[in-house]
Image (cartoon, rainbow, N blue to C red; front, side, top):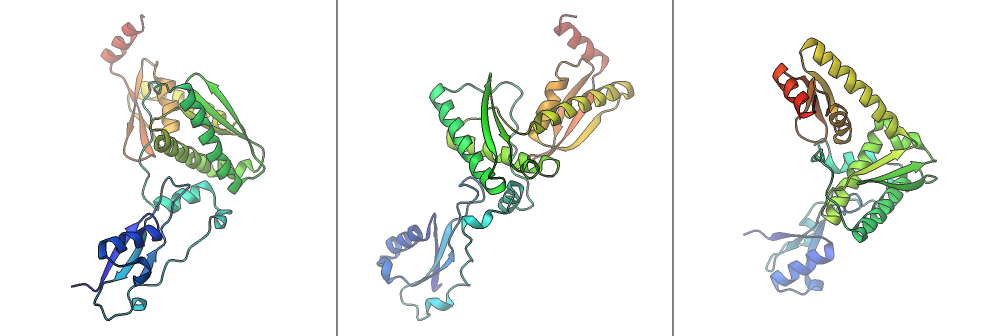
Length: 278
């Protein structure tokens, strides 16, 4: 029989309480080592870890000092000041890809006004916390256009907020979508922009999509855009949705996927023309 037993909970105190109840020993009489203090992850959304204690079972002659490895070194939240959002995401997920948050092409279901207002305030607070770590001098404006809620970050260190090839901005957007779904249980169309970067990238993607669609039509071969995130895929899908010569399809798993732009067969093109009233 093992001389030790591990207990895990959201916090060390709760783990101690759990062990105390299960073993019938008062908390202050338990002999245990802290294996992990646990972590709430990134703002309590991803990368969270439970606290773990290793308890010496009744009747064991061993001392708790030898029961477990050294406790984890804990880092206060203030130690994250030099980390970008991309680094925080990498820290939480490691080398694995986070689950996809790609939304369907149709508009997101509506939400009532009170929920929408609460959602906007939650996202505003979340972005303020992230930008405080990266660029404290930034300001945030909110605009609503139809079903889309747009958050515009202005001023401060825009280059760090955007990151290399938009990676930091993509990470912020991913975390916001993850948080909104966790907090409100629904997906809402949200855009986050920094000094017009998103509009510039959308313009470039629209141009690229049109060029590749024309090339696919001319060659009769599919064109591929590699490692493209959900937000950018949506731009390409919408750009070419009405194109009667090609169709688009996302391939792969995770947030970064391939996007195929494939020429339609003659029969497909004719059916599309008829459906468009041509």
